[in-house]
Image (tube, rainbow, N blue to C red):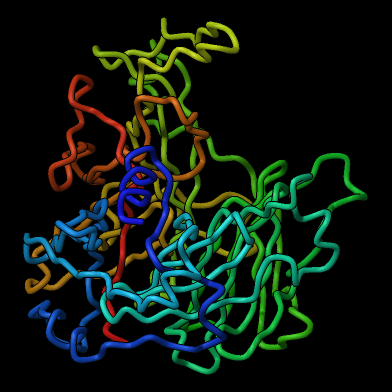
Length: 430
């Protein structure tokens, strides 16, 4: 089993040893609170929001034990948590279990097993698991699944710790990127949010990202084709209510970026919603990604080359983030306001995780007005690609510079594939 796990991690599959959605029930926990108490040593006042850690690829010790690794930015050190061994009966049940990370929120990892369409939450610090309803509980599962019966989940976030009876799990799922929610500890099925299929529209509006405000108790989401910002009230478990919705104009490229792009190809835009609870402010963070970046930082002559069905696409050039812009949203205002100069002292953390914006204190030892980013899942990575998971860094919004994060390089020659892709994780011992 250990060799199987090692092989799957090495080839990019997010296989997790002995974590089975089929072996745990709703809100059934495997807990080791003493371990969590011993390992949680952030040294930060409990009233201060814990800064995220960077989740690194796991390592395997002699004998096959898997160890989760994190980089604690605030204390500039690594944190390690050994995955608790299962007993023999559980081992037999989970011998072929594999799952991919589809989110990180409130101290829990969200995982989706495409083999059996099971979803579950896992806290690597306390070694607790919570099974969520499977995808097939949505209406018309044959439409939500691929022809071979497999589902897909793009992102999953939580409104709070799943220990809270009112906790809501929200996800973007399916080929059309629709929305659904459930209550982890008491739901047996997923409830769709809004129009599930868009059969009556010429062009579907897939959801790009979601964010939740614990203060407002509202779900924010944005779509494309055309661009809409929606706000949902999920207080009624059976019938979610749209709070507000409006179409906004596409923002022009930042003037700060115009000079850079004048002689280069237009970058891909990746949009993330970030809610700053302390300021009661919703941000739209626009990330610019060059899909094929050459050694000199120029993409203009790097058009994709197809070598045929046996060799596939030329993948010698990695994609890379080059810039960020942040916009403040006010409902009803057609054009979001571009933030100039600074982020009001906030540090933002974006990626596949539940995006976070937090004010900083001296104890946290992080840089204000910076966007800490990890790879998004918006770029399709072929299995044979030399790259993927590598797009990690720190963007200084004031100085307009990018610097490396942890030991992950930015220069062309040093970039390599990292699987599973690192992501931000907010530690919790609950």
